[in-house]
Amino acid sequence: MGGVFINYRRSPRATDAVHRLYHRLSQHFGDAQVFLDTSSMLPGSRYPDDLRGRVHDCEVLLVTIPEGWLEARDPSGARSLNRAGDWVRFEIELALAAGKTVIPLLLDAAELPSPELLPSSIRDLSLRQAHRLPADGWDASVEKLIASLETLVASDWVPAVLSEVRAPRRPGRLLGWATGLLAAALCVLIPWAAAATGPRHKPGDSPVALLLALASLGLMGSILIAVLLSCGLMRRPVQAWERDLQDASQETYLRATYPVPAFLLLLVVGLVIHVWGQSPGFAVVLTLGMCAAVGPMAARFVRSLKSDRERWVQWPEAMPSGAPMSVVRREIARLDVRTQEWVAPIPRGQRDRAQFALEELAGAAATHGRAAKRGRFRWLCEAQPWMFSGYLLWLALTVALTLAWTLPLELEDGGGARLHAAPVAAGVVGIWLAWTTMECAYRYQRWQHRVFHAEAARRLTLIRARVDKLTMPSRTRLVTAKER
Image (cartoon, rainbow, N blue to C red; front, side):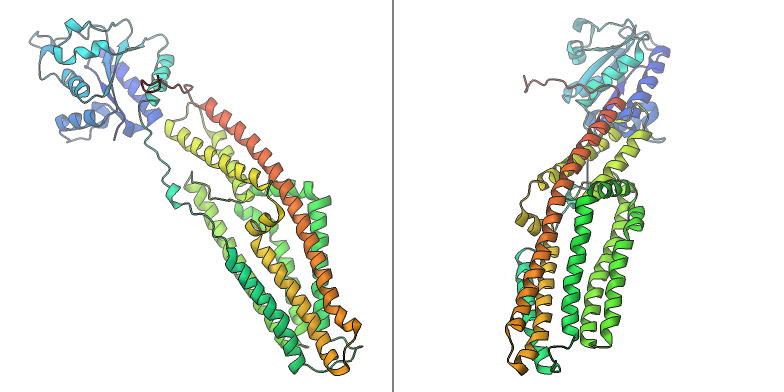
């Protein structure tokens, strides 16, 4: 159990001082970390057993010595310390024999007794460095005592969530092989199906495959324009908007950002409705793709809301490796709100939790600082593997749709340079659009990570200074013999 054991002899002056001391130590270290017989023992418990057990468990024994402590006598007139059954003497003996840290507390003008005046079993008490608690300046002296005790008393709070943190799973090579095989299958199966079962079109016709290929390239162009606007001209207002939203709750953030995925969903639904009458097969494929995208997104939103509420209640938690900026920024905002509501002096456990949270957030912010220095290929593989894979499949689908339009014409009319060049042109245009989009996103993320790292470091510095100011006394550190 550890903690502090307060040893004292009942007297009007000592009892009042001991209770004041117990109240302040309990406020700082917690009730479980400070033992005082009249306050810490349950009714009905056997006090000899409890006292022995707590002396053996404690880390520090505080011996309260008021004036006249050495000459205190029992009802028979004998000096109390000379009796072998005296509990004050017995507790000191147990602590010294067990190698505990024993600190004499001198009240007011009391002096530490000479060794020859003490029983032989506790003479080592006179060799221990004492701490004085005068009536004038009591509070300042107690705070200095607390600062010293912090180096001797272990914290009763430990971050039990460290073992629960798991590294995020990355798709790795499996995603690469799956993307390559699926892209090759799209480029082969869709043109083959169009050549085998599709009607023969004349060069002037506008079949569904051609319309879908042109729509695909048009959508790529629209995304590029949106990325150019958001990552270029509007990057600072967008960054400020995201910062304000991410400082709010996850629910508020989702409510403010849901129009973007909702617009894309409506766009896909409209495309499915338009294609359904001309090619039900393509419409079914688009519908399945839409469901595959919307389902995990909805599940992720629900999980994020649940996790957001849990993190507020179960504070603090270890930050997951590679936590996104929205999560780190929200945790910084929460810590800022918590510390603004605290009143000095804060308990030790509260301070330890705040320091743990600060260390976790500083580590997460440093990760984003390193992310700002990643190269393009590493960024695609580590931060955007699914987007990279999606664009490759998108390009393969666009080329496949173009082949599905040209292949029947080539089989019927013998083809031509224009028809042979159509898939190549579609691939080149698609690659240019995809590469330009990703390049803009890459430059934007570098700038975003760099700005976020500087912002997080500044906010964490302010919060750390606030926590240090709320911590009274200022923490000191005793130099151990090993360090000397």
